[in-house]
Amino acid sequence: MMLLDLICFDCIMEQVKNGAPESNIGEPIMTPFEQVNNTGVYEVNCSKGHKSKTVIDNIDFEILYEYGLNAIADGYFREAVSTLTASMERYYEFFIKSILKSSSNEFDKIDKIWKNVSNQSERQLGAYIFLYSQAFGEEPLLLNTNKEVPFRNSVIHKGYIPNRQETIAFADTVMQLIETSLLNLKNKFPEATIETFLNYGYKKTAERNFGKLEKDTGVEQHYACVNIMTTIDVVHGREINDGDGRQGNAEKRIQNILDRRNPRALTLVKDNPGK
Image (cartoon, rainbow, N blue to C red; front, side):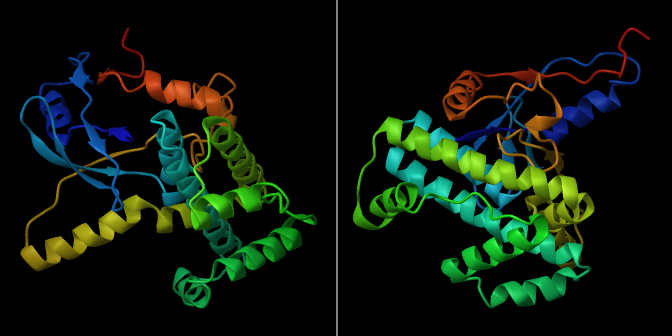
């Protein structure tokens, strides 16, 4: 089961009111855990009895890939293949919208364009192949039509239950496919990539919904925001730092996920606590 380590807005505000981190190092704050959902907004119940809201600063394909790794860790291999496939398809959507944004299209127009193919995965794949080839002068990495495609179809459409080794191999392929493309996208179209992430990420959606709620009720909405450090990461990619703890293939990432399921705490500190 995938659990997100979040933050408690009320615990943080208590320490800020007490002067942390400006005047002192705060006391450790236990990290609350919540099951992943589809909205990116979490009702947090911390060990002190606080009830607050936390929004994750991520986008769907990042969370879906991590969800797939968690499914492998828990032995749900068929569900893992389905989720990893969904992550890949939602990345295609992100890539297409990022390329359209790089051509100065407004997001309202991009949404109208996408609506024409939103329920047709084959057309989305075709758009991805053509746009990638045009942008980078070569075909993108894709699932092998003689290996991964029949495997995926057997699992999703024919009820085949894969073993762990098969699922790990599929996770590695999807990871390579997305990361190779994403790195190229970020290097050539950095502004459009980040703008697309910000517009379609969970945080922006939550802000829109909270704004509507404030307008309807007249009650100001308070919430914390946290970035979940996922394997595939648009803004804080593991390629930035060779010492990043998220390095490695799917097998290593699964072990890291299992290690991180133990309770943890965070502490508010100055940039340089010694000063």
